[in-house]
Image (cartoon, rainbow, N blue to C red; front, side, top):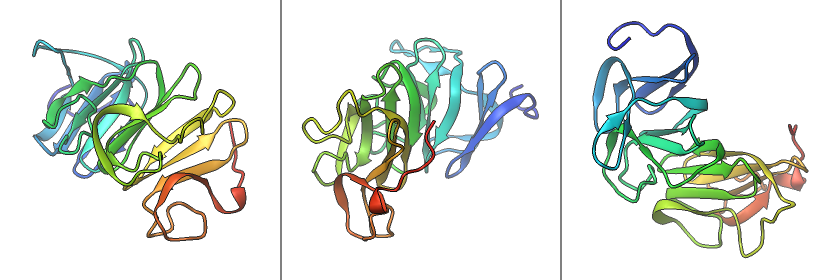
Length: 221
């Protein structure tokens, strides 16, 4: 299919200058101007191995796309893979080198992955209580913006999240992150708040997970 029209796609995602599609078999095809490459026609994305060779791979679920990078969950083992810009560690491979191939992130058994401007996050599918993020962002741990090149626990202060606080979904924006709590349906956000992104009625940055206004309850799966 390289260089030809994309047919048989089941989902599509678009970022700053790139579009990617997931095919029926889980293959990923991308095209457009990425941060480190230009694909003028759809090309199948391959995965970079530690020894420098590449292999084909497939994904499960949807592709999460941000400004200059994207991530997905590999079908085999549920490992997160990312590609694109890596200036601020958004690929999570402990490096700052941009990639035109998918690289493995140190996060396994992932059920949900999200991509923001310079950061990415994932939720563990087994317990749904392990939220990790990487890149340049607020990590919801009481600190201001930091840059981390590999997955670190996020959205927790001490024992803020515990086994009874399962996360259904995580989404990422421009320097802020939100999580949907599975049991209560409560949406909690943290990070940049200048445009009211946190949803708590204010415009200040928020350093720890904070419920939206009046603890708003949304639809929950």
